[in-house]
Image 1 (cartoon, rainbow, N blue to C red):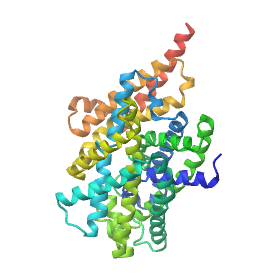
Image 2 (image 1 turned 120 degrees about the vertical axis):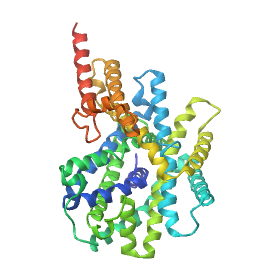
Image 3 (image 1 turned 135 degrees about the horizontal axis):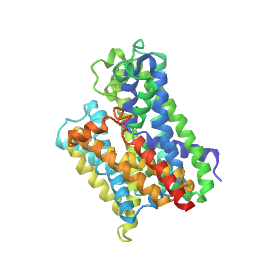
Image 4 (image 1 turned 60 degrees about the horizontal axis):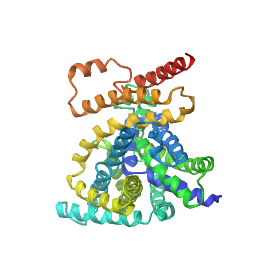
Length: 434
């Protein structure tokens, strides 16, 4: 049995794992563009950016590992999907990006060092070595993140949120961009979807399961109970934070007019409220947010790859991924963002449909038929979306896809995938009747 304090600590760990810098950067820009519609937009953002990952987290934690989502696929497909997933959200793409966000948004504004190759490499190496020290003692992840990093991060965010509510910089403006043309709830839903935290939830579900196992809790129904309780803590905290950041963006007209992203809005707002202290507060928030995410994702990736060879265990992969992240992060944030997005567009729809299929797995007349047909359909459309982002999709195919519903929202795969899932269930039932 877990005490309430233990559940709270676990919930705070989940909150910190999900709270990467991207989750702090996106909402201020969304809030600025939503203007007077910011509460509705924030609600939509939370539905897809918080609840979808929460459902995935509970699902994976109950199963025990993210790999269980793919147990109905051929072995080669399972390894391909999970290998790509952990590399994309880990040391090949996302974690070097996390390192660069910490360097460019937190470290450089302090003007402690100059922005050159030596400075970037030194910061990347030290930042990743600190994370590696936490990861090499996996049993302490829940305590180090839940008991120490999260309270420090939360304290800084609470100070900023209270100051924003008490002293907004400017009146709330009329909605702009997509919010001026489409329903705020719809645009907010899409914004939350684009955080792509379902991928992270597949990795973090295993961390939660292992953290509970350390406490002697491994039964599926009990794991679900405690994950629901701890996850609810993180959902409330993330929702409160997102509402605060949306309000920050909505009241940021005086500092947001020339901002290129939400990170600039956030940093300018904090600097306006707190002066030079704001720069240090911003650095603390970004570094802690990125460090917790780096620890969580990389440890999950190392745990997955460690199972393939008994001599290449968890510590080996932690060290390898730390070195990879440090090396790849030297390419800079702009390059990494350009490469990361197509890869995420390819696998994110597959991850969502895997979770959806798992939720209704017991109701599927033919499990293999539904999995194969649904995921193959999803893969075809997500591949087109990825190629379109790279500019490699033939114009004739692009024009054909543009006739699909939700194409303009970046979700051309959704209705075909759902239709194929329902069709496979119908075919499975008919086959059983015969």
